[in-house]
Amino acid sequence: MGVPKFFRYVSERYPCLSELAREQRIPKFDNLYLDMNGIIHNCSHPDDSNIHFNITEEEMFRDMFNYVDKLFFLIKPRKLFFMAVDGVAPRAKMNQQRSRRFRSAKEAEILEKQALCRGEVRAHERFDSNCITPGTEFMDRLHEALRYFIKSKISSDPLWQKCRVILSGQDVSVFNIFVTNYILQH
Image (tube, rainbow, N blue to C red; front, side, top):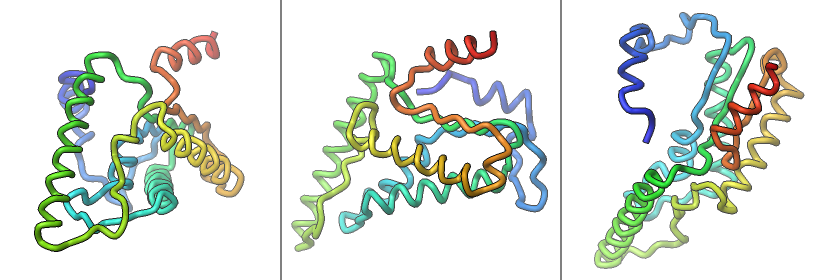
């Protein structure tokens, strides 16, 4: 859902935000704030139109970690690395998500029927992207895997040891983040 017109506001105020980053010419950054949702969705079900596409949860997590590690290596934040996984959504967004999820399940069902008509049979169960929502077992496992990944990187990678790393998981609301930061600063 996002904040209306926020990207336009920021990109007009900071025009170099939209410049293509080149690996050899990346400026120095103090902080890296990463919204994990795009990474989670792209790594868990990159090809919904192909009913034969199959990926294990272990492969999904590995792809997510590789992507995060590559971004971290490119940016090399010096002070803070903040990874955010969406928490519980407000009521209006929940209604929007419910209708989108219903539509996506219906589209998957149609693709499945079309494939069966062509004589194609699915050899495995389809990944249900609806499990990428706060409170599901999938998100609990992902959160634990992310925590393990972060601990592993901090203990073994000198770049990760140089900055503070924060994981805001699916069980954290934005309000809790602001209250926690306020208490820590005062």
